[in-house]
Length: 82
Image (cartoon, rainbow, N blue to C red; front, side, top):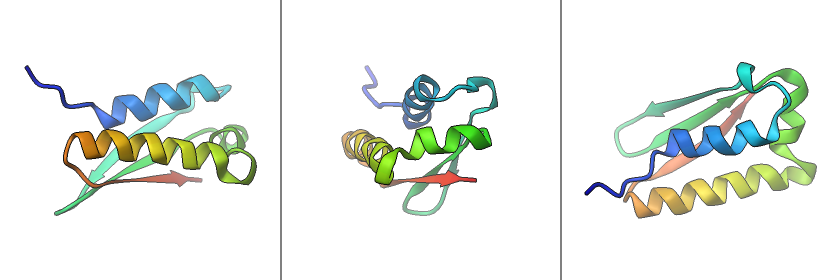
């Protein structure tokens, strides 16, 4: 049984709960040699909801992704793209 957590699905479900326009939300994973980067693209008016006051929501998303990545023995970064 594979217990790997799908990082992309995790980020998508977190962000969909935050944004007003979930249909315009795009989550992409860019894989490099030793790490991956999750890029979050959202509607212009939803960017503040994903980032949060003083970046608190973004930090929380990064923390959850880091915990899931450690469980998967991966190195994953989160990037919020405007």
